[in-house]
Image (cartoon, rainbow, N blue to C red; front, side, top):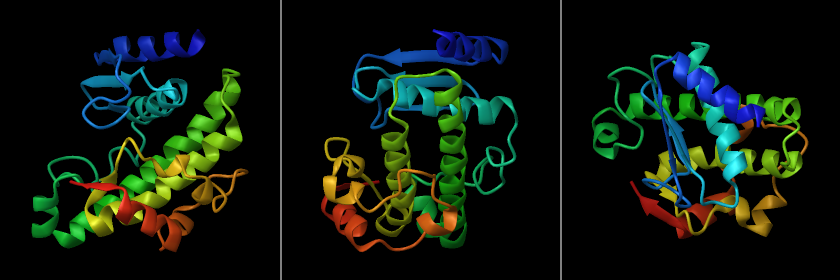
Length: 193
């Protein structure tokens, strides 16, 4: 598959290790990208969606996208999943969460184009809804210092799916505001950081 070739070539060209895990998730998530590694768990029924998403983070890194290297996200400024750092630096913590949300929005705009480019067997409308829900969760990840349980994802909830558009990726301003039903879902189905 052309997508795999593209990922492997970018990783080879940029000295990035590639790791695939047969589990549904690894260290609590489906995948991630850093300057040193490209990681993806292939046990999930959404493996292709996760692979496309992570490949777009790889593109952000390799293309030196300004959002990837933004000062609120990169460097030694802290880690949004480190609540101790967040308590010591509340303003920076909030700014970092907002920038990560913007990073994810950029990533999924790229992913929609990549799905079309490679003619992948991914339902674009479903992908967009799931992405919008995920982006909107960042408001609550920050508020409650949590992440949703992998066994109970908001993008699988029929009531939440009805609340989000399927024809476009929502803007940051649309995502970063309270949504009562999503807030209740996260509050009832989260794990503390």
